[in-house]
Image (tube, rainbow, N blue to C red):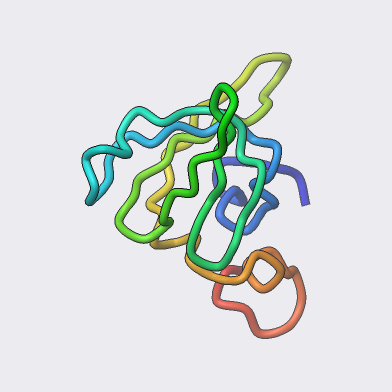
Length: 98
């Protein structure tokens, strides 16, 4: 499945650049970097020399996805990402993410 704005919530997020644009915890807004880990409830974002573990729920992310030689910014409500990564990205079976 190609990475498109529509397929992003079902796609692998590790390796994408992300920025937090709004969050229940205002201290998280502005964190930006590469997604290096993902769990059911958090994303690990590498920034400078440390990794910030950010809750998915209650957070709005902007992801930069490759598009025609450049990047396209896609905004995603983190509540749509709360699930085990393997379950969220599956393409077959009965999945609420398809």
